[in-house]
Image (cartoon, rainbow, N blue to C red):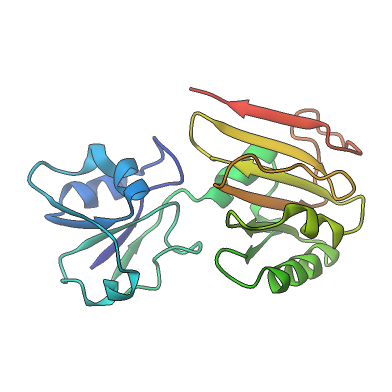
Amino acid sequence: MKVVGVGCGPGMLTAEAARVIAGASLVYGSARAIALARDAISPGCEVHEITDYRSLRSLPDDAVVLSTGDPMLAGLGYLPGEVVPGISSLQVAFARLKIPLAKAAVVSAHGKDHSRAVAEAGGEVLAGRVVFLIADPAFDVGAFAAALPPRIRLAVCENLGYPEERIAVGTAAEPPAPRDDLFVVVAGEFQDPGTGAARPAAALSFFRRS
């Protein structure tokens, strides 16, 4: 089995990932992962949308399993077999915000205890890290902001890599609000990516369209 990262948005499939997918005769993935990899899938390849994630460990040895973003960032990298890395939402968010990856602390709140994730993320921020929080649609950004010192900067990054990508930056005192279900949150002390200077409030919102 091979677990292949397809990137977090269109056009982010690496050459290695595309080569592995092109050589596959059996592919499994979510609807979004299949859509991102569609151009690399060979004609005649058997493609299955994943409906039961609990059964993935029992797939045939020649299966290629697609994972959105990078398989090792809250993805399917726990499955047996080779992992082919992909471009993650962490990489894209930190690149957009011009934050060095060495400062990152990853916290997952996706389908998990949100209160525990908020507490963990708050501890990382107070320790001087920049938290990359993997959210789900029910995650309350306002509650997270309320647990942080008012000066801490917050960014809500939506639909990273897609034409409708949106990044809104504010502070814990005036946090940005998500407008879409597909988002992550970045929190910590970082600069305005547009000017290199710190701004005290919800002062920056930008979109990327292609």
